[in-house]
Amino acid sequence: MNKGYIFLLFFCINIALFAQNFQLQAGDLLFQDLDCGPMCDAIESVTQGYDDANFSHVGMAVEIADAFYVLEAIGVGVTLTPIEKFLARGLDSKGNPKVMVGRLRAKYHSFIQPAIHRGLSYLGKEYDGIFDIENDKYYCSELVYEAFKVDGKSIFKLYPMTFKPLDAKEFFPVWVDYYKDLGLPIPEGEAGLNPGGVSRSSYLEVVHWYGDVSRKTPTK
Image: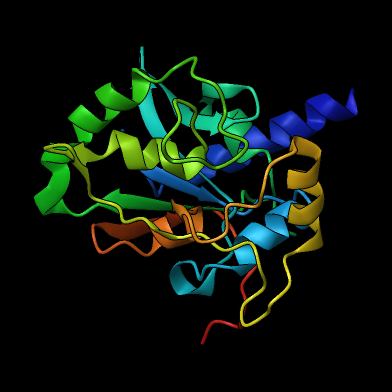
């Protein structure tokens, strides 16, 4: 039997078992611990995530024709990704997705459908590889920021971005090379947000962990 088929079958069985105890809902935010090398490490290191978890990506669950997708901003732009494909991107040592699910608290549920509608309106937009909150391109947490605007103001906060290790004066080498290749200055101190910061929002409650994610310090 093809090894790829065996892996897919095993993964789908795992997801089915999770579904017996957890039901994903439209509007849920999926925080992902990706293993994309130095860039993901740099993103995760500058902001503490919920429960000290490291998150380098975030997307929003949407339901279309009785199937779940993740609305996300990735390299190809703003797109819809089947939930199974999203969850399979990064697995822990037990083969479970390194993903945490945050859900708006009950008193904010009226924000969800407008956020989904607004988020879907960005489909096809280009990915924001320079992390500029003012242009008409979008990175993962920026898309979430824009989707969850209420009366023109997002429920999530912007903070000055940093591209340096905490308490360090020098930039991460990966960012130096990245922006040098783009021919642009590093946007140190400009307004922005990342998945770790969004995961700690008071508007959210954590409702599920699909698997283990890496953490800065051991959880007590």
